[in-house]
Length: 202
Image 1 (tube, helix red, strand yellow):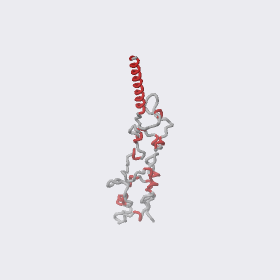
Image 2 (spheres, rainbow, N blue to C red; image 1 turned 45 degrees about the horizontal axis):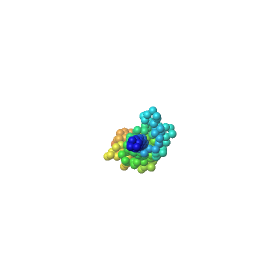
Image 3 (cartoon, one colour; image 1 turned 90 degrees about the vertical axis):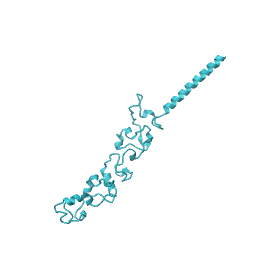
Image 4 (spheres, helix red, strand yellow; image 1 turned 135 degrees about the horizontal axis):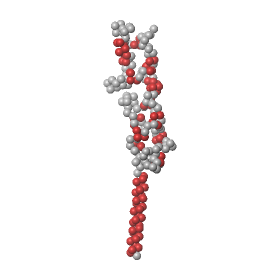
């Protein structure tokens, strides 16, 4: 009888250990390196191994507040997801992109840029039309950096709208007629259109 009692205790104890091991195994499998992600592992991983990750065509990144559009479609996951805990990535442009404008233009990048291209000139031109210097004539085709040069830590805010702020060298270099010798005004719009300097106003 005593032997039977010992055997029962042994079997019960072994069963408890197996049950505890199973629970530990389940807990271990539930410890997802991606944090609280509910998608099935097979969405990104195959039976042959964790790496390389192969994202299923059915995966919809838009469910996570950031649909992949334009160049973001070709961007590698790790370019934005520096941590394996995917929810640690923000959903604003500044989460991944350094602000080349150093905060001067705010954080609404979509006013001038699209996921298709940073250099969406048409959108930039439209944005410029609501500033105190709407682009007309030759200015529509000018490179932004031709006028927006770093000065006193700024490139955009408080940029002068006076012609000579960009065209003073043209004023000094002009010889036909010589603007300096002739005492011409530096208020260029008295004689010139933005379509072209040459010819002047009638």
